[in-house]
Image (cartoon, rainbow, N blue to C red; front, side, top):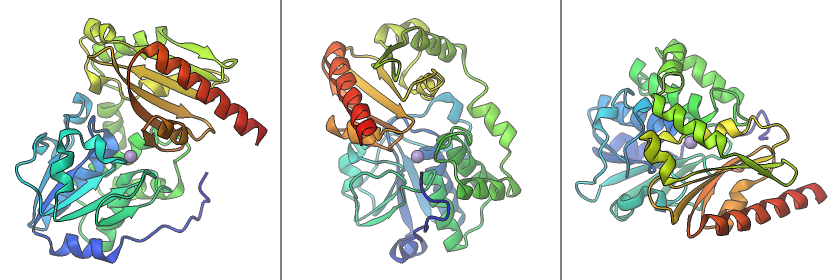
Length: 330
Ligand SMILES: [Mn+2]
């Protein structure tokens, strides 16, 4: 756990200058944008608009319905019109997660990375702090440093980002800064109850049905310390779900007693292309994900795998078991 009074890196002056002086921005985030990706990017977009600047938000895929209500979300597009002058990539630990937008974004004259993941640096200017609960915290720090006003709409976006990335203030990354920022956001107009309702507590039935299928698939390994589930194209088809409906399902796996690592193997469409998500109590699963070309956070990571489920499952369970044994021995 990060120390309580960890030094918070201040926004780099060259980034503040780019934001102050730039006229035209493209903000980009990862495929399957989650609450933090959208919250941080939408907040920055709205703040740039309020300064009279052009700012467009792109993501390779659209978010789930439970985020579409967010202020500014109707302006999100999935295609880049032209190579951007200034691109700000938010909450995206690897350029590959920009999907088809990757080449266009990387061609920006000025490329900025704002993130709380601990992946390899990307772009000309980085503002990265892995101790931050959410990328939305970094956007808050930027707006504070710029002394740009935080409207109720911006406050709502940032609150969604911080609330979702901390599992509504339950995960290990919940810290004093996140809670303090959220208190300020509520004073500025964010409505915690309404946001929790819209994001968390009003889901289409199909999502609950998909969740049920994932829970029914659960199995365990390593004496219950590893819990894993599977979602196949049949599960998505039978419930009418798409890839965006999977978010937060793995977080339910964490309720299994004795578990130290949870895994969800999912493939919405193609039985040979697996997206593997990892969650852990103590183990650094980002290190394990990196062995498969993925990444993420120590407690929440993932990777893509092309091949058989049986193959990736047996290899990953082996890798996780030995990582758990090593952690125990060390
Ligand atoms: Mn995040």
